[in-house]
Length: 255
Image (cartoon, rainbow, N blue to C red; front, side):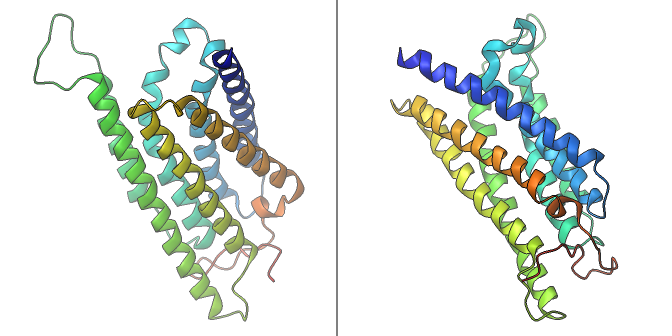
């Protein structure tokens, strides 16, 4: 019975979270404003997040779609580069993060190669198995996440320093919003890391941790959606300083 409730919760969360991610991403893509260039990267991040969490709703997918779920793993390597590019462009419109996106694409392609099945009749004891590839990719993705969280922290520190040079109080809404994004992302992904270790170590608490991660995910996504509805200025902006390397978007809420 517990297993049934767990599957029901995960399926419900998967459907709700996927739909909200897609809805918010579409809003960011079609909404006009000075923050639209940065919002494109956040929309891309949300679309890939939807691709990731749809696995919780696998029971509702057609059989052919379920067979494709393992091949969504390479897209996970693009999530953090996109989120980082969003943070950079939001704070410093003159900067570009092409090399980070390129690195994410290279990592995604490398991951896709490891997932390609061997030609029929070809076997080798020297080639790693699917389980080994999953562990390696899982470790790489966790490392990538924390590296990019650190890089986003550096961007925030640079933004705060640059803004202080021309304003008495650097605690803009942009800074506060990105600080919340970094903090919540760090907390949520640390739960994901613990959950991954639980499944890898065959802990009895692994299913419960899966549910906890799913509930945290849907709460975060719901909060972002409500924020987009109630504080559209955070995503649309009202004024942008000249793209000269100085802090860019100046949205309402300079305190």
